[in-house]
Image (tube, rainbow, N blue to C red):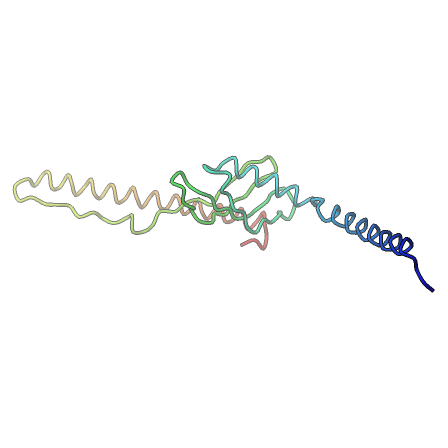
Length: 165
């Protein structure tokens, strides 16, 4: 059985059309965002609105919360000097509120400063030492407040996005 050129072209064209139609349909369904993807896109826009350079945002490990009212994830973006600041955890709530992982004070920042003592100004030496002590205590109090804030933030993340951390 011999197939003419016209019939062969018709068969090849039909097979090609069928393959393209099937591929096109699967591509269309592949490109349709799922419910979580729509939620992720909305969360990314909310996070970007809080960044200095929104176009530099790099998102990782987006996770919908157990009740799908929150999205947790990591974001890294550039600061005003153009350098990336490092990954930060974020939580976006259903009403588009965003909470970022709080910064904590480095323990090296809370050191008792050396106070220069003079031999002729005892009252001034005491006042400088007391002021240095107040600065040190203030730094420790601020660090404690920031650590409590961080602990609260991580509790929220653990409760809202189980398995994220």
